[in-house]
Image (cartoon, rainbow, N blue to C red; front, side, top):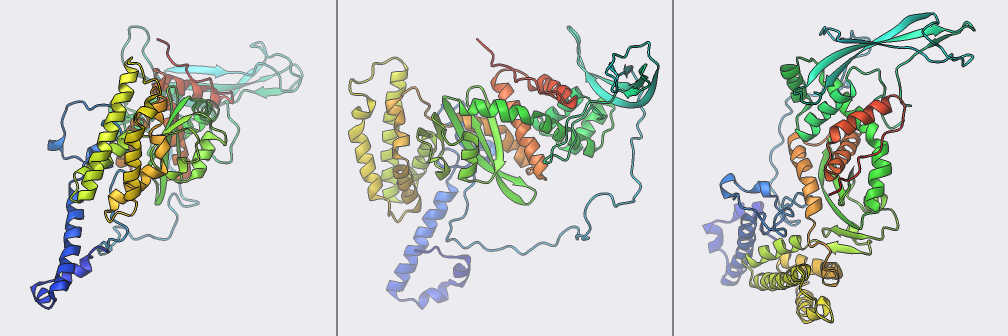
Length: 523
């Protein structure tokens, strides 16, 4: 039965009702009652009985008490966080707004031939360093200070100097790097040049020592941008107010992109391998915006690594990350793209919330089904926790012990696949489609019950997405995913990501391989 649209409701008044027969009035009342129950159920949705995120609660509705494992972190940051209108519900379109600035039709940025701008801030030089070639590029003979030398180029580098043992505070230091050329006995002049990584077609930012910001300063800017969630403009303001440093937002953006490019080999070789080799892997996805394009932010996390990927919400992303022969346990939500994984686990917290929503609905069949499902889940979870706590499992196993209860639930689901109540029908079908993946924990009580690990990994970046509204360019999206992967992986391994990021930049700017990731901390 279709919902009454706004267009329909505007035509209903007392005069219209008087024209209806008794049967017509009863039919209209039935439709109105169904719509009213649906609307009230939607108004009653909250993070404990639906997929709404915890931040949707009003401040006065939030409590400071801690929540158990099954109710805490899976309230959810995923793409199903906000309830959308029903597919058959007609939503009244709002009148289009006039754009604040009318487009000129010209591309953004400086026009060809226009006069550019250079740095106007003059900072004192704290340190001077000379770089000289060590061997002749012609005859390969060693070059020393005894050979004739002259300067041929120079660059300035701004760097943050971290305090030593017992010290406090950061110090901004400007270093003048002078590059020398030396003449060999063979007559050839050989020049020292700043380090440079080879260009890559997919990156429009260079990876070279010929950059104003030093490795530690770049890592500091990344910390402000990604961990502190500051915009480029706010980072610029912070650097000027607290360090007296004037950097343009373009330079700050360049630093972030360069750091992402420097980390790409680490993510592709080490983090992807750690994710594929994990005994238990958690996966989730949430919506992401790249300028005007709707994408998805995927996370794959285990005990020692976290990988973020931004792309379409499609099976190809899962195959690209996990490969064709992933043979370990994967914990996920109900998205169909995960169903090709043989050893799959379903998050019970998602189902508990949906069952609570049915139990609190106005439909009697939905209430009974929700209560029945909650009772079964509570019994199963209690049995799993008992075995984890040291209680001996039944001789024939937990699955056989709970088989009658599960069979009754399956019969109830089969009887509700065509229920008139939409959410009851959807949950019954979801349970049938992934039936075995819900009850694997009865065979393996040591496996997780929830997808909380993936939810926790996404939470910080979902907040960042709400502040920044996503990324603007494909390169920015790529840099974000790479940086987020290394940051979260280092935090998993209980080490600070920023010294490691600075060292990766230092080596990659010289054209050298990136150092390996810090190893997980041992107890």
